[in-house]
Amino acid sequence: MQVVNHGISQSVMKGALEAASDFFALSKEAKGQFASDDIRRPVRYETGTKDGKARSFLKHYAHPLSDWIHLWPAEPPSYREKMGMFAIEARKLALQLMDAILESLGLGPAYLRKELEEGMQMLAVNGYPQFSQPDVMVGLFPHSDYGFITILLQSCNGLEVMDHDDKCWRAVPHQPEALHVHIGDHLEVLSNGEFKTLIHRAVLNPDNRRISIASIHGLSIDEKVSTAKELLDGQQPKRYEDSSFRDYLDYLHWKIKNQRSFIDSLKIGRA
Ligand code: OGA
Ligand code: NI
Image (tube, rainbow, N blue to C red; front, side, top):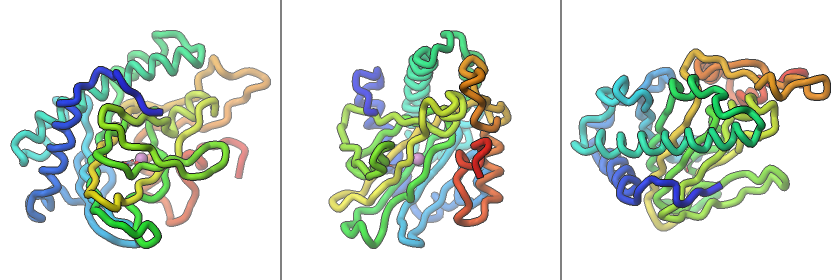
């Protein structure tokens, strides 16, 4: 879904996109200090055009902010402030949305409250080149996000989501005031499949370089997410194994190319 009137001001959203864009405009050396292909690093930059995809990204943990912000880029000078403001606001919105989602599942308002308060947030700041041949190169291959929910801000068109029913790609139109929200793997697990994780991808924009900022919200790194017991009974057996964010990182780390996705690896009783 896309949300409007979400309480995050246009200036905070614009500021975060500017900070991202200014970061990507830095020299190779400046960005290179964050470069790593170790997915377990809390701050990590990657860039490159390979295997038909072109994307640069800076991923960094964002909650609790005081644990991580000193590891974020010090250049451009306003990066920490502008991205930090967006991180705080996006997290507030995520907690509100989680309240509504948990209520819709019939789980009380206090459900997971403490764990969510202490939960983790990761920002994926993405930069994509302008490119007009979608058959030749994409931005980001189809995947689902690991957390409960993702809030995504995009500077122009490029995000596409797979329709759960007809399995066709649908473009998520860029609306400057709106934020896109989608479900991740761990909400599918928590809800025992009532909510389904969303497969999405990014295509390259034919007219513009593109920036997107994905804010991913889950439990803290070693906290296991299990299916809510309240949703289980004789007719509704537990369908997913418990797992944590660290389990996800380990899974990705060891995953052999073309093996099944993380969410598929958690499904009980299906080979
Ligand atoms: C992501 C993601 C989509 C986009 O960072 O996980 O799905 O539009 N990004 O950049
Ligand atoms: Ni994603």
